[in-house]
Length: 209
Image (tube, rainbow, N blue to C red; front, top):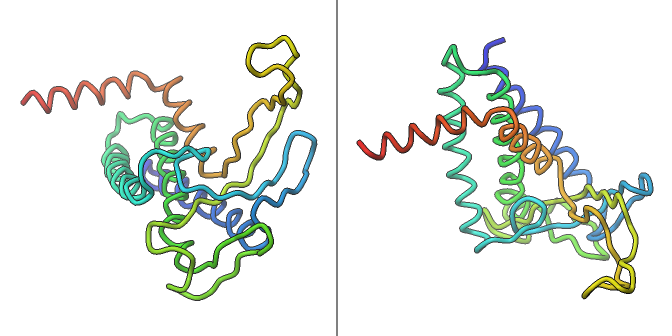
């Protein structure tokens, strides 16, 4: 298997798994509905308009357009990298995971608002036909569902500011695409800092010219 085919396989596999999970949650659960798997793992349906783990930076349209540009740039970079004999397989795998995760969340923004009605606390979303959904192109919300409250406790009364309040270790709700982005980025920082630094150096050299 060539590096290019491997990258394509990773992207396709992640997108299929991510979208199957999201479509099931979107069309089977009402907003904020929760399914207990274990004490530390829940399927908890929420939607967000921002980046990974529900973060919000700037406007929704600007964020969606940024995703489009970033995905295009990363796709071209991986395609060129896959044709270089010295390129490391693991490096391409990590980049492909990040690309697939970004593309998975972009699909939500691009199409979910066009073809589904809005999820509410009392209503399970349904397919309503193309163009009849709750939001225009690029303005759909991202579906999140994985919730891992690994530790649930309360701050001691003597703790400054938050004494007696509830504390949850790892409270973000995320999806399969977010997980791939996070794993890919962490692996890049741990194992492929040299490749990342070389990329930065190349950019500086190009800009100097």
